[in-house]
Amino acid sequence: MIIENKKVVSLTYELRVNDIQGEIVEKVDASDPLVFLFGAGNMLPDFEKNLEGLKSGDEFKFGLTSKQAYGDYVADYVMDLPVDIFNEKGEDNSSLLKIGNVIPMRDENNQVFNGKVLEVTESFVKLDFNHPMAGENLFFIGKICDIRTATEKELEHGHIHQDSCGGGCCH
Ligand SMILES: [Zn+2]
Image (cartoon, rainbow, N blue to C red; front, side):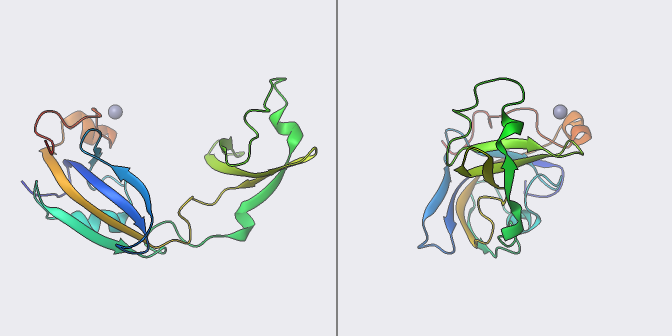
């Protein structure tokens, strides 16, 4: 079986910044592999392009430019929001408003954006809504653990219905 549309893929990987020498920012190992429905728009399109046609047990390494990954870092995505909006519910949000915390925020269309707290003052909170990897070139090194055919339900829903890859995965 090879990786193609309508297959559920399990894989392990290391994500590094820039190239094979770069700093490791994420590591997914065989105890908790990444499992996803291929070709359903759940992953970066160029990430999937590099995996298409691989078999179980195959290893991979490839780079994605920031353009193929999460785009440029946009200074305008850093915003000062009034501190009041975090206190509206009368809850104590002091633990929420900590430098480095990532806070899910909804816009008027109810879409969720994650904002990382950069600064907190008495009047405003500075949040960075850029993707954590915006502006970075990515490098992936990994191994295909398992490939299976997606179920009808999974195809209907556009996502997988289990979070482990079962017995035969990379062990
Ligand atoms: Zn579902």
